Image (cartoon, rainbow, N blue to C red; front, side):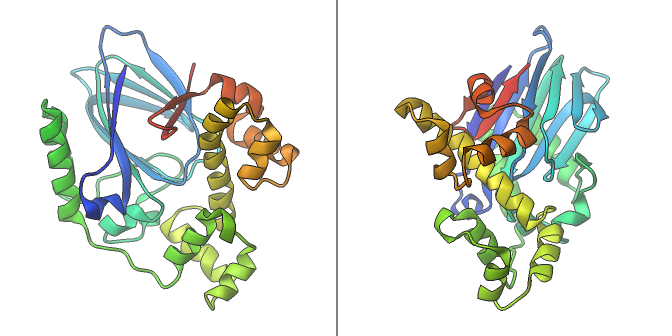
Length: 277
């Protein structure tokens, strides 16, 4: 299985799309299975000539000429998702920054989601255009087509408080209690909670917990290089103590940080974090 990750070239798209990757799995390859872990990004995958079977967060993708086009969105899973690829797979996956996908949609993000994975087809030309992109063999041309499409679909997104609140929750030195953050922006916790569910499909507490986890994944790369222990890592990511770090890791991954970090595969500067099975 081969993966190539790219950042947007467009200055406009850089504010909303963290990046995207092209995934190719050959028909002659053995099946590839991995676990992927919770993220604050909205993750959109498109592929062609596939059959997909879902069992909650266990997903099997089989490629073949009898398969169909698939477009799947996920933005609110709390435990690992198990993905298996078998056969010929041609996939593009987009990572939209928190709130980013809202800037391309006529309705709030929650209108396009359901439990776990949701079929995503927001515009009349979405499917035919994505199929054209998937058929394009020249990767530079494919990237140009991707950026041109999302720029064409850009609507913008402005909210009275959400951008500021999510920024506060993403900054280590400004994280506080939600009540304090609400007071800072002259609103209340209930309103912020409702707006998070509407535009991010998760609660502020889930958002913050996931952010700490993702920071720990990235920080673990430097930790390994420096030879630091889990205590240093827990403080870097603003966990209360090492036991707090271990408890959150187990809730997200089902294993201790030590075992997880020994097993995880970091790709593209920890942007893609998979545990191959």
